[in-house]
Image (cartoon, rainbow, N blue to C red; front, top):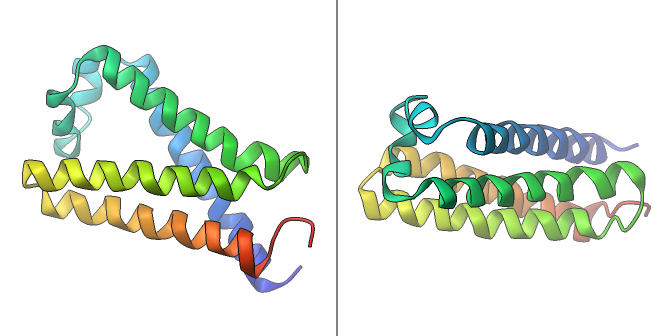
Length: 131
């Protein structure tokens, strides 16, 4: 396995686990408790509990889509497709941060967009699964 393949695996696991953990918080915690996690969660003020649960479900499905196909080898093309979907999802999050004037937090969302875009490029072009 090349250094790039190792890096892509580590990035896949790190992003997948981070998004799964975040999704669990959004799915299981009451909205007020999730909001109290930190200043970076003030965006939840603009969404209902049902919308927050929907966001959590999308994040969880994205995390599963990153990890499961890559690990099982079943339809591994789904992993970079999930990365594309999560990049678009985080572009929406960055847009919400911009709208709210939360530039410092928006930088983190943009970093996720770039990480997911790199992961997708890496798995589509540089080191596809099973190649």
